[in-house]
Amino acid sequence: MGSSEVRSPGWDAAVRAAVAQGLVSAEQPVAGLLDVAGIRAAARALREAFAEVGADGAGVLHAFAVKAASLVPVLRLLAEEGLGCEVASPGELALARAAGVPPERIVLDSPAKTEAELREALALGVAVNADSREELARLDALTRPDMPAGSGRHPGSSLGVRVNPQIGGGSIGALSTATETSKFGVALRDEGARAWLVSAYLERPWLTRLHAHVGSQGCPLELLAEGVRITYELAEEINELAGRQQVDTVDIGGGLPVNFASDAITPSHRDYARLLAATVPGLFDGRYRLVTEFGRSLLAKNGAVLARVEYAKTAGGRRIAVTHAGAQIATRTVFAPGSWPLRVAAYDAQGRPKRGEPVTQDVAGPCCFAGDLVAVDRVLPPLAGGDHVALLDTGAYYFSNHFAYNSLPRPGIYGYVADAGDAADAVDAAGARGVRFAPVRTPQTLAELVAESGGGHAGALSALR
Ligand SMILES: *Cc1c(COP(=O)(O)O)cnc(C)c1O
Image 1 (cartoon, helix red, strand yellow):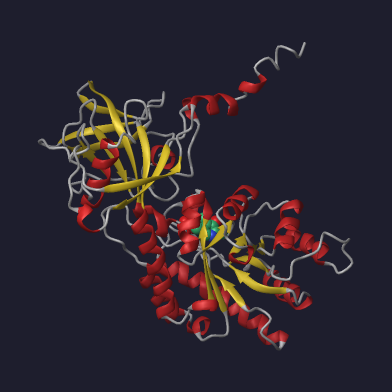
Image 2 (tube, protein in one colour; image 1 turned 120 degrees about the vertical axis):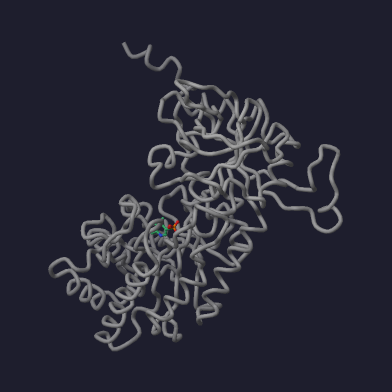
């Protein structure tokens, strides 16, 4: 990415205010920013996109994939906008519950659910998608009518199976979940698998949903829609043989890719909803409830990492800005830069757009390994110590996929809104337009870091003699 597009003017006011208000400083040199109005708008656009093609009201649950932004205030905000949660671990379930998301709006997926997790989900009334034959056998045991008292299944907990339509992957192997040999779901095209699954449903009247999640970033929309079509046809086949609408819910997963190259939202949830309605019209004729599980496409463009430039140096003719945003927060970008390129916007010491004749430079992070780079050969105004950089489109996954390298603390995350009305035009003493922040996650303290690194057991090994 040679990059002439280095600005995202939508972030300028927030960056300026974050610097003026000290959210990023010499002491706290990196922070995450979330655009609250943008998140609300994305949730609304998702709901509207599916409503326009007939999936509205009680007929659809948009369950946000918690791993994309595992932050309780974000889950609460999305719940206010009518979304639920897709969770894949006891921790994510606890976050969804802490956000006040009711169990009937939570879906549990994961390829490695323990018996205790399944028991808890069933007791709460959370929907569960079994990932394998063995997991289905566990569900058999847990749903038997002669289960001991207190281990019962909440009537609201609806159960299904995740299928892998085995239709191939996208451009990022690690995120392609519907390949021939993917670790997820029941591989539908394997010899005998489809017949086995159909009879498994017919033998278990309590299996009422089917789930597929074909992939994520790097997967074309047509591939995602094809996975949904195959899943829908399986539901139709089961219902035909059952002689009733046994499968009443199709969970189509998430995976809408995000454009990391500019501010444009493309493809949109509307593009995808329209393609689905054209590819699988029967899914929208009112016979099925729909569950979606979008993550990245709801949050990515509504977040940015803001970091101070600590030093600027040259080495062998190479120009390097050493910043505080590296592998500890932009983990995927640093380790797989080809798959996860990010736009970097340059700001000065006061958080104003940086001026100056652009030059080619590398943007490095603080970690002690040579590959800790978030951008290579990027053309930006010359960065100097005290300046700032913003890593754009980082609202999804970057704030939840931190990496503890060099014991760098997890940065604070702040949501913001522009002040409404007159205040929006007012310029405060520091020159920042009216922007209000609220903490989403406070910066990890060194005391917390020491504690999670065994600080409470300092003498434990010495005692083992
Ligand atoms: C990760 C995941 C999602 C969300 O994927 P995005 O690409 O962020 O939309 C949805 N469903 C399942 C099962 C997942 O594992």
